[in-house]
Each structure stands twice: as C-alpha cells, then as structure tokens.
Amino acid sequence: MICDCSAPPVKVIQDKRLAQPLSLCGSTLRAPHGCHAQYMANMGSIASLVMSMTINGDDDDTGSDPQQKGRKLWGLVVCHHTSPRFVPFPLRYACEFLLQVFGIQLNKEVELAAQAKEKHILRTQTLLCDMLLRDAPIGIFTQAPNVMDLVKCEGAALFYRNQFWLLKMTPTEAQIRNIVTWLQECHDSTTGLSTDSLMEAG
Image (cartoon, rainbow, N blue to C red; front, top):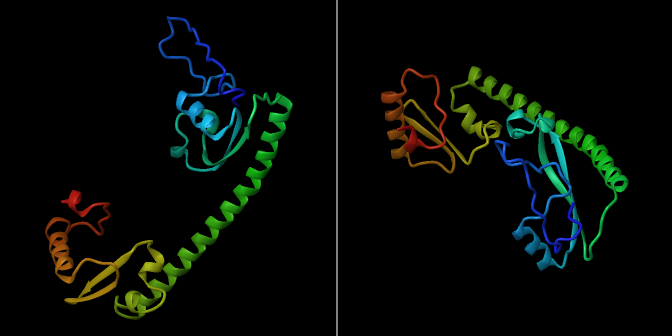
C-alpha cells in the first residue's frame, strides 16, 4: 500500500550488528522505489493498493518465502487514487478475503484445465502407440493424430529406412541426415536425447 507517493521517505535505522539489511517485504510502511513513484506520478496517481493473486504451483517457483511455499504468482489486483489515501486495515482485510475466495475458484479452474490437458495427452499417446503396434512408425506422421499432437513443437522429422517424413518447420533433409550421423556417433548408447540447443549439445 502506498498512501502518498510524493511523501518524503524516512530512512530505516537498523542495529549495526545485524548481518543483513532488514527486510521490509511484508511491511505496508515501506516507501516506494524512486522509479515506481515517478511512474505513478506520470499516471497522475498518488496512492495505490496492490494485492497479489497466487495459485497452487511447484515449490521451485516460490523462491525463499516459506509463507508462499507451494504457491506461484498468477496476477495482481492494483487500485489507484488521484489523491493521498489511507486504506484502513479492516477494508484491506476484506479485500484480501475476497481475493482468497476468488483464488479458491481460480485454483479449481486451473486444476480442471490441467486434468483435461493430461487426459488429452494420455488419449493421444494411446492412439499413437496403437499406430506403432499396427503399422510402421510412419503412421505417427501420416495419420491423425500425429506426433505433433503429443509433443508441443513447431516441427517434427522421422528418418526411417533411409526415407524422410517431415511435418511443418524442420531442418532440410541434408541437415537431418547430419543430425542422424551425429546421434549415431556421439549418442548411440542412449535411448533418447533432449536439448534446447544442438550446438551446445555438441
């Protein structure tokens, strides 16, 4: 909460024996950063109230805050006022409660969407496996659904019995042949290779 972005800031004096600077992350009394105050002034805004909307997520996405363990930021609710304004605690608490109720419903929607996506992936995977069992591997490239319905990508290539099957954006056949040769020479003992950069992979 920023009651007045034009108010002069007051320095926080902390004990010199403290090993690290005092954290004001959870404080509503901290002054706005200079560039943020300038940004508000450019908008003609003097006071603001910001509330975060979090949803269930991986622990790796939450940083070091133990209170937010298992949560990740989904969005922000930002309120502005053109004159200095202090929002009393009961009103802020009521807003936070409404956000929590909204967050519960939002979590349900996100979880349902994730479940539907997982079911679609499993269904597509089953169909592709059936194709592989019935036909040659080219079925996952020439029929529907194809391998691109399972793996989110911009293109896919199959090199089978010295023939090429290409879907959408792919390297040229000569480049694919070079990749195949490289895989056989450098990664012949592995069952698969995943990389963000073929150049970095060698």
